[in-house]
Structure formats: structure tokens, C-alpha cells
Picture 1 (spheres, one colour):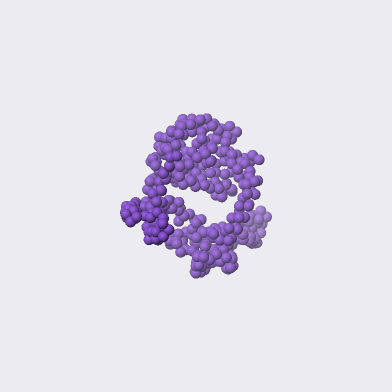
Picture 2 (spheres, helix red, strand yellow):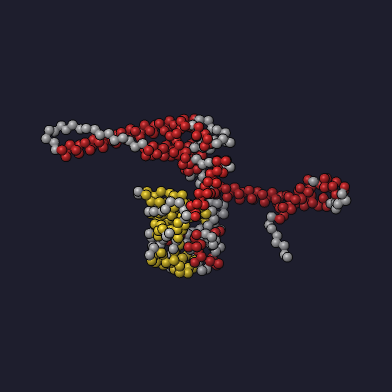
Length: 418
């Protein structure tokens, strides 16, 4: 049977021989005492010489591995210092607070915390309406005129009261945040949840604390939380609902509402002149060929991110459904993936182009297929309009982002099937 060499075998052998050299004297005495096979002095010299030759190679390998690991960590964590969710979670943790923040980040977090607290306070305690009686100066004034005067005076009075109350609330919350900032940080081993529970004087901050502060990892509370979550998820999964996503746009993807100036849309990413879309009862039939035109370079890493939003009262709100793919090219034709099920499995020349990803000029030949997206969801039923925003960013071999990115959005509704 042919032996399959592993590219890390030499590394393992190197470390094994290093341990042998450290135990040289003990092994020699043991072999002498029990009449075992001995390693002769010239063999020990050969082992030592081999180790000296291989040691620089191992050090180079470790340095290369460490450099690659650092690049991957920097790439994965590149958004942490700009994502307000992580900044808020750090700030509201009494173990860290503003310890790692720059002045600009501290100002951003304070403004965001104050804005969210003010909104929460105004929703929970709306300003009382005050009705002011207005005496008419004209004896013959009609009842309609008097009624309109009362309405206008009421509006002005309510606006002034609301503004005054908002300013007063904002001032109180600012003082509370200042007091929180002046508190000494607790030990890193302390439980932040317990600290907030024992400091009821900051109860006005509890709404955002509950929103952002997470249970410390590897704690008893965290284990309990995961156990309960697992049970809930199993119960919800057994009662999952299937939904069909019906897109509003006939080409499924539309141009993003707030795309950056350097972001390409569906037609900017690929030449779609040889592909056709036909809608039939919400299902889109697709046939033809598409040619990639996104100006990236071979070997670039494509990072993808998808976020689902829900439309309510004129505003798109982010939902809990999101996904980030670190390297889209590596999993573009993986069978377990959603995009394989609904798209890439219908590319008939996939074997020829699977290593080309979205490189310019890559021609994807499609068999005729229907884009009928059916997805299982657990929890509360879905209703209303939703949109899924997909962004693609390209990074060169030095992990530097390319100038152009891609932004696609699909707006539609979910139709319950069961």
C-alpha cells in the first residue's frame, strides 16, 4: 500500500528528534541497564546535525504561519473597531469601558448611547399633553375661529413642553453616563452582569445594557444560557415553517438603495446581455449565459456578506438573519450551500471555470432553471416586505481591498407554504 506523505511530517519528526536529544543521557542509561538497542555516539551526532540543518526551516515555517494567521485575524476583525455594536458592547462592559478607545471612538460611542437612551426614554415616557385655554379678544369671533386658536396654542405648548422635557432628559442621561465613566473598572475576572445588577443607580442605562452586553464566555451563566438556547432552538426547529421568497424585481436583484459610489450593481458585475429572465407566478425562469466583468485580479479573495432587513413604517430595520462568507470562491460550488442549490449547480461548465471565480471574462453557461427560493424559518411568522442586501468585496494577496465592490439587493415578500 502506497504511503501518502503529509506536508507536516517533517515538522513532527523534527520535534520528536528534539525531544530525543533532550533525553539523550537518560535513554542511553536505560538502554544499557536493560540490554536494549542503543543509539551510538555517531548516530547521536547525525541526529544533532540534522536538527541544526532543519531548525532554520522550521523557524521560517512558523514565521510564515504566524504572519498568515495575523493577516487572517486582521481581516476577520477589521470591522470590529468601526462596528457600533462591538464598540457599545465594550463600553458597557465595566471591565473594559473606554480603555481601548481613541478619542474619536469614545465620542462616537457616547453620542450613540445618548441617542438610544433618549429614544427609549421618550417612547416609555411620552410628554404629557397640556391644554391651554385661549381667551378670545374679539367678541363676535365664531366658534370655529376659537376652536382653531385653541388647536394652534395646544400645538405650540406641546412642542415647547416636549423640547424642554427632551433637553432635561438628555442632560440627566449625560450626567449618568459621566458618572458611569468615572467609576473604576472592575477586575477582568469579575462578572459584568453581576456588576450591573448590584448598581441599580444606573437603571436608566439598563435598556441598552440588555441590548448590547453579552454573558461572559466560559462562565456558568453562559453554559446555562447555551443549554436553554439549545432546547429552545430544538423546539422551534421541530415547528419550523417553510416560506417562498417572491422578489419584486423581474431580475431578482435590484440596485442597492444606499450603495457606495464605487459599488457595482448586478449589470456592472456581469454582462447579462445573453441571459433572459421571465416571471411566472412569482417564480423567475432563467436561461442563457453571463460573463463576469468585475475588474478584479486572479487569486483575489472575495468576501461576501448578506443581511436581511424588514420594512416597517417607512424604515428598513435589520433582522437577526445575516451571514458572512470569508472566501466565496472557495465555497462557490459547495453542494451544502444555498447559492449552489439555487444558482451554481445550474452552471453547466462549472468544471472548467470553478477556479476562475468572478475573474473578468469568465463565462458562466446556464441550463434553463427556475429560481424558486424556499427557506425554512423558525420563531415568529414572517410578514410584510423584506430585503436581502448582499455585498461582495475583493482583496488582493496582501489583503488590501480592491477599489470596486459589488452591492446587490433583493426586495420581496415571504409567502408561507405550511
